[in-house]
Amino acid sequence: MAAARQEAELVMFGALDTLFASTNVKPRDVGILVSFNLSGMGCSAGVIAIDLAKDMLQVYRNNYAVVFSTENMTQNWYSGTEKSMLISNCLFRLGGSAVLLSNKSGDRGQSKYKLIHVVRTHCGANDKAFKCVYQEEENVGKIGVSLSKDLMAIAGNALKTNITTLGSLVLPISEQILFFVTLVAKKLFNAKIKPYVPDFKLAFEHFCIHAGGRGVIDELEKNMQLSPLHVEASRMTLHRFGNTSSSSIWYELAYMEAKGRMHKGDRIWQIAFGSGFKCNSAVWLALKNVKPSCSNPWEDCIHEYPVKLNL
Image 1: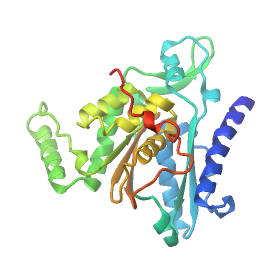
Image 2 (image 1 turned 30 degrees about the vertical axis):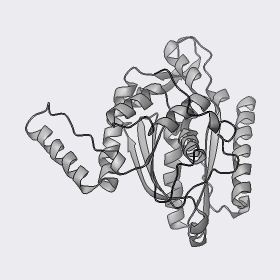
Image 3 (image 1 turned 135 degrees about the horizontal axis):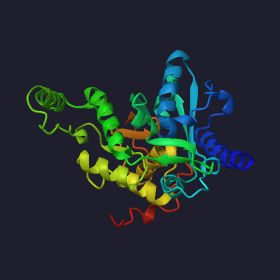
Image 4 (image 1 turned 180 degrees about the vertical axis):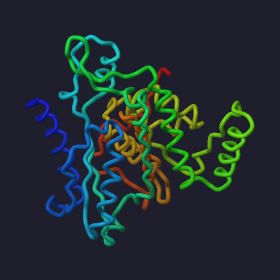
């Protein structure tokens, strides 16, 4: 526990000190503190926390909120021999991010992004979904997180539910009509009709797909017909930092900023998956041509990326 706390302080204080220094906001100016633990929400906790902060800012006007996301390796390291539990040791890495949210009208000119939508999907009522990423004791009493073989299928179903709601908010009306007509035809006439996959490239310029593993990124790239450029930030984040849990989508956003790709009016889709099972989406609008933040995590290596991966 002492080592886990030391690790948490290392990441937490480092990220928050940098955030306050780069925004000229003092800790005492932050009016909203989320004082209960969201860590059980897994890798999608970051978007859940953003949604909670958004709700709080709608109630408490003229305020700041800080969302901090991290992965604690010391507390969750598995020291046993069960293969299904060893996978997490290979994927997860130490990391963290701190995000400052404001509802002050005077901050609009210096803000980088505007939060447009948050859509959350929870599949915990399904037993297979609930246990596909599950912390438990194995035979000799060591605690670890087991990953089910059904994980990718369950993640796919959660994503379908999530984008059905999100699509109605962000897609052009032509795409919504095609999706709806195909859905009705499939239910009424022929169950074998292949469902229409909306072209989300018409709604977003940038995609931040949770770097949960190569399989997750591969499946989304294939099923959503994305280009290698659309998933580059996710692949490079996984390559450079590993799976940093709920903070991974912010490393990906930082990658795009470091590459100079974020322009005024660009729309960003953050997609996070987590235990439970959950799929959560956040949609942002760039308010300016965004430059890298102070101490961007890519600043010492962005010139080396993208690297060629053996896929």
